[in-house]
Length: 129
Image (tube, rainbow, N blue to C red; front, side, top):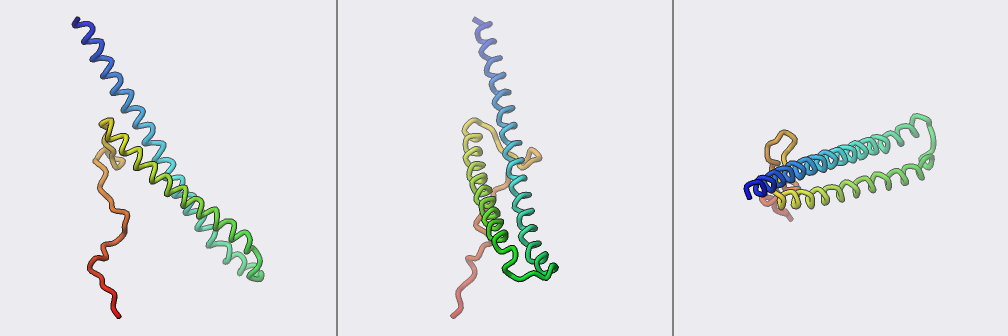
C-alpha cells in the first residue's frame, strides 16, 4: 500500500513540475510575442514617419508615395489589432494559470502589479462651459 501512495505522490510531484515547465514555456513565448509586436509597431511608426520626410527630401509632389503610405498605415493598424488580441489572450492565459495554481510574475519572480488600462484618473476634472 505504501508503494502505491509513494508512486502517486511521485506522480503528482512530477505532474506539478511538468505543469510549471509548460506554464513557464508558454509565458516565455507570450512575452516574446508581445515584445516582437511592440518592436514591429515601433518600427512601422518610424517607417511611416520617414516616408513624408523622404518625399520632401527628394522634392517629390505630395501624391508620390501616397498609396504606400495608406497601405503601410493599414499594416500598422493590423499590428495594433494583433497586439490587442495578444493582450486579450494574455488575460485568458493568466486566468487559466490561476486556476491551476500558477502565479504570474513581472519577470523577476515578484507578483505582477495590478494595472488599470483605462489611463489617467480624470474623475476630478469637469467640463467648463
